[in-house]
Each structure stands twice: as structure tokens, then as C-alpha cells.
Image 1 (cartoon, rainbow, N blue to C red):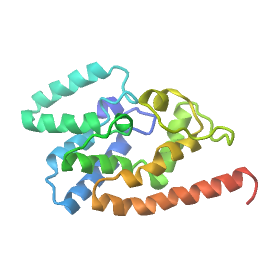
Image 2: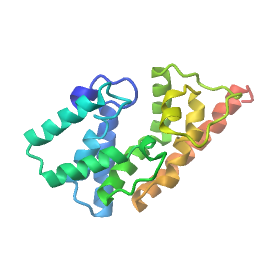
Image 3: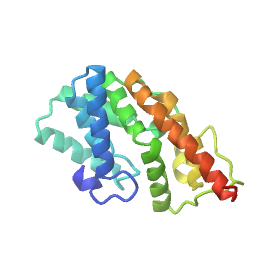
Length: 203
């Protein structure tokens, strides 16, 4: 993870992983789930993501080698692969994958880090990284997204809130995660109201 994401400038760097690991650990405690597999998956969930790496096949092979070098059992390897292959928002656009409880916890932790004040910061950080405009009232948020349209079409950063970030609260799995999401959701809603008022010079 350090090698892949130590120099990331898309909002998927080591600081993101550290926060997801902390959230995963907290949710494991609240949901009474053993931490090893969820924390391992949380630590590694972006090392094979095409937003972060240029050669996904090579990264998958390197991760398999790493697992074997660290003597991770086949059972735990399988559990981690099932989580990191199916937790992302884009992976679930076409169909909804039902994850194990460990996977649900990691997914919740990753999605919690995508909303709230940190979610706002990361959205604009990623948008700047991709050269996306801040806002264009004439460009409406998209619906019925596929992975290709979600990833390949450049849209204003503000649209990302309506196309993804505001939807995540209702897609969380665990009771603990849903409780944490409520405050973060309101932070984003308040921000959007203020942003649009300032954009129009109303305040």
C-alpha cells in the first residue's frame, strides 16, 4: 500500500487508507467482528483500483505474491479478495454485490471517508487532479450511470455530490455506519446550499 499510494495525489493516498483502517477498526468493535480480515482489506482495498494504479493485472499479481510471502492463509486471502473486488461504488453500478459482514464494514468505512467534510475536501482534490471544473449550472447531474460513463466523462465536481456522495448514506450496511453517516450527510447538504448561494452572489 505504501509503495502504490505513497505519492498519490487523487485523494486515495496513505492518509485515506489510515482513516479507513481507523473507521474499520471502530466498526468492527461496534459490530463485534474480528478485525484481522477487515483491517487487511481496508489497508489494501485501493492497491488494485484502476483510479490509483495503471496496470491492474500487475498489481493483482504483486498482491498475490505479497499474501503468500506473508503466509496469509488461503481462507483469509479469499475473504480479502472478495471484499476488495466488490466494495467500490463503480463495481456496484451494474449489480449490487452482497458482501460478508467483514466486507460490509470495510465498504462502510470507505464510504464514510467519501462523505462529510473530508468527502467535500476529497471531491475537490480529485476534481483538481482530473482537471474537472468546479460547477456549471447548465450541466445537470447524470443518472443510470455505468462504470464507463462514471469514470470517463469529465463533469463538474459539484455534480459528483448528486451522482454519488449524497447517495452513499442510504447504501451503508451496518447500524453503526449509518449512525455515523447522518452527521456527515448534513455537512454536505449545508455546504451545497452555501456554495450555490455564494456562486450566485446571494450571500
